[in-house]
Image 1: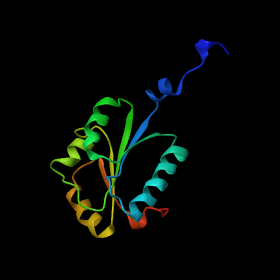
Image 2: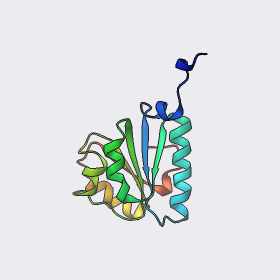
Image 3: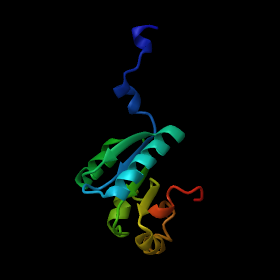
Image 4: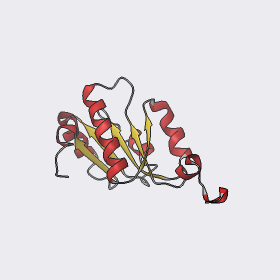
Length: 132
């Protein structure tokens, strides 16, 4: 193998499909468990690189800089604004967004996002199941 054949990890991650996993700081026990599960699933089952963001102030910067984003995942214990936050996280509808929330919140969130093709809401109580 020649020096030209070797690719550094930094060079290879720029072109590989990446999942943006957003878990706002101060996450509880449920969020941490879901983060680990989702990270492993996306990385090992689907072969995606994972970019984990815990400071929501950095999300916009990551969305602008990472051109290989495949999808966005948000694990959060409170509702998400359909008018302001969802357009940002979907890059104005160009990226699929998966929102994982407690069932009591996910039901209302699902209704709010019903008209949006690229937004999917999952109750975290069913996240480990074999269904959707």
